[in-house]
Amino acid sequence: MIRLGVNVDHVATIREARKTNYPDPVRAAILAELAGCNSIVVHLREDRRHIQERDVRILKEVVQTRLNLEMAATDKMVKFARELKPDQVTLVPERREELTTEGGLNVVNQRELLQTVVNLLQDTEGIDVSLFIDPDPEQIKAAHKIKARIIELHTGRYCESSSPIDELQKLEEAVKLSHRLGLQVSAGHGLNYQNVKAVAKISGIEELNIGHSIVARAVLVGMERAVREMIALINP
Ligand code: PXP
Image (cartoon, rainbow, N blue to C red; front, side, top):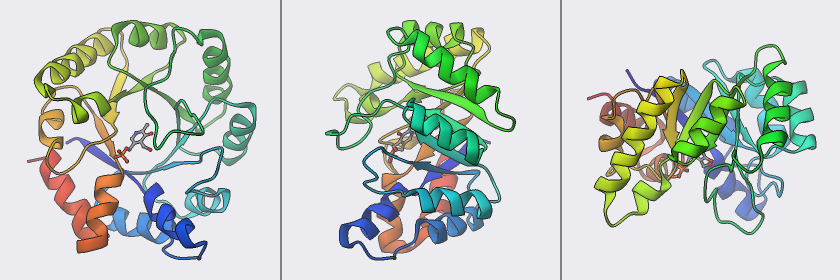
């Protein structure tokens, strides 16, 4: 079974568009869990454009599966995570002007900083640490060198590519290399009901983290149905 992590950021995007107190990403998370997802993912961005600290604190209390907090490797966020102790932290790059996380972490160039942050988080009881990286052998080897145990491969290129077969092959090779190095592999970004099957078929990917497409479908068919349909696609 491939595990599904449901990212509820964009429920908060709708809320923040009008600065109301609805729709609540916490309620969406509960419905996603009822539909059978394996974890809830939220990205607490520096600009707080969608998820707020309040959301993460309540999710920590109510999530019954696992809470995966995506965040930048900054002092403030590390402090927040060490206090909150989510089940997992996924370190992601962050740029203010971007629409969404545009590329993976550059572990090769930021080795010292990331090594320190990974150590601090992994030494905090109860937190697993994952690094969000492109399916690039150099980045995978660098993640291994700084003793990460989990990586999440960025599927954005595959999702946007006009030659997705080449990108799928890169993902496949990245998974093989990661396994040789003993890393656990997740994947995500840009996956939807049309493009997810090919990625789910790659042997060795243990978890997919999907947000925008599930929330977009949930607006029309409801959260539970949207999550159930995705689970059925990734585990045919
Ligand atoms: N995984 C990571 C590390 C992400 O940053 C995101 C976006 O927040 C996702 C998965 C989900 O991407 P999408 O919303 O495109 O499904």
